[in-house]
Length: 95
Image (cartoon, rainbow, N blue to C red; front, side, top):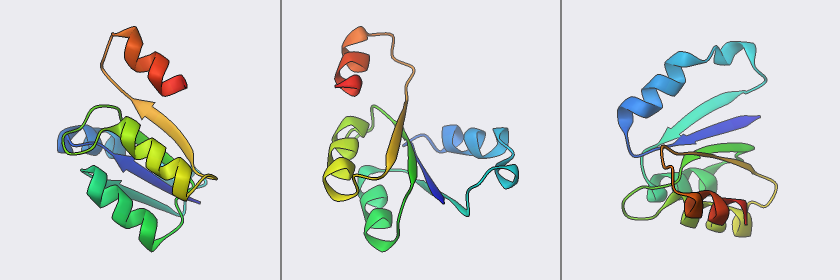
């Protein structure tokens, strides 16, 4: 099982990588991308089972990325990360 972490903030990605004992979970690979484009390229190269994604990124938001993923890899489970306190972001993510 492959996990993809997508966030434009490199320190946030590193914090997630460092904060979890990935070797104790069922993931074969833990991959990272810092943009919408990098994430799409990884999806085109391999199967991604779970994507952990920031909602707001420049040059393609996490919302747009999840919409693309659901069209190209519908079996992928998507989880959003966000620091936003606006309900509109959560409402759109849920829908």
